[in-house]
Image 1 (cartoon, rainbow, N blue to C red):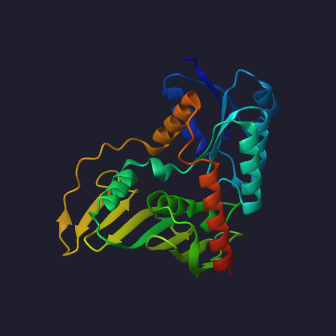
Image 2: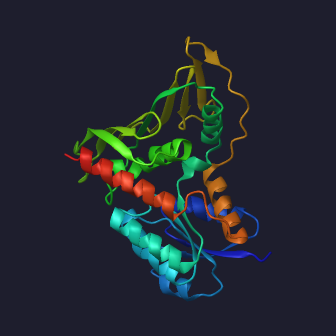
Image 3: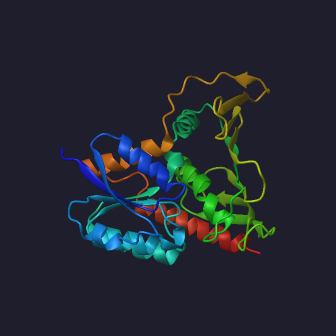
Length: 296
C-alpha cells in the first residue's frame, strides 16, 4: 500500500506532538507544515500528492480550515473542540458528507487504554450501578479563543458519550466565573443529568500552578480514580468497603498515537472513524447547551 502523505496545519504545543508522531509511524510521510508565520496553506491544499491534513490550530479557525481542506479533497483530522458553535458543526457535517473524505475529530481520551479498560469493566458489571462521574481539569496557561469550559469539557463529554451513549441532556446546573486570569471565563463547574447514564460533574479552571487531569467513576461496588498527571500508578481502584483493588496490567500506549493510527487505518481501509463528524456534532451541541445554562 502506498505511503500516505500528510500536511500539518499548526505547530504549537499540540501540533509539535503530531509532528513527532508523523515522523515515527511507518508508512507515513510528513510533506508540509503550515504555521501562522509561514502562511503557505494554498500550495498544500493544491498539492495532489498530499492525502491527509491534520489541523491543530486555535478552535476559532477550525471550521474555515476544515472546510478548505475537505473541499480540496483531503482527508481531515481535526483537533477538539471540533468547532465553536452548533451552527458551524451542522454546516461542517454537510461539507463532510459532500466531500466523501474521511473526517475525524481528535478526542484523545477515547483512545486512552485506561479509559477503554474502564469502559469494559463498566459494561461487564464490575462497578455495579454507576452513581456519578467527576472530571477535574486545571492548567496554568489560559487560552484566548475559547473559555475554560469549552477548552476542557470536550474530554469528559466525549468519555461519557463513548461509555453510555445518551441521547440528550435533561438538566444542567452550575456556574462560570472570570477570576481575573483571562479575558474569558476561567472557571466553570457543571452538573449534568442525561437521559441515560449517571450524573456527570465537570470542574475546570485555568488559575493555579498545579496541573490537574483527574477522572473519578463512583459505582456501588467500586470506585476508579484515573490521574493522568502521574507517571506511574495512574489508575486506582477502591472497593466499596474502602480497600484497594489490584489493578491488572494495562498495556497503555500513547493515546495520541493510538488516535492517529486509528485515523490512518480509517483512511487506508475506508472506515468510519469512531470520532466522526456526527460524534463531534453531538459534543458541540452539549458544549453549547451547558455553556449557555452555566454562563454568568
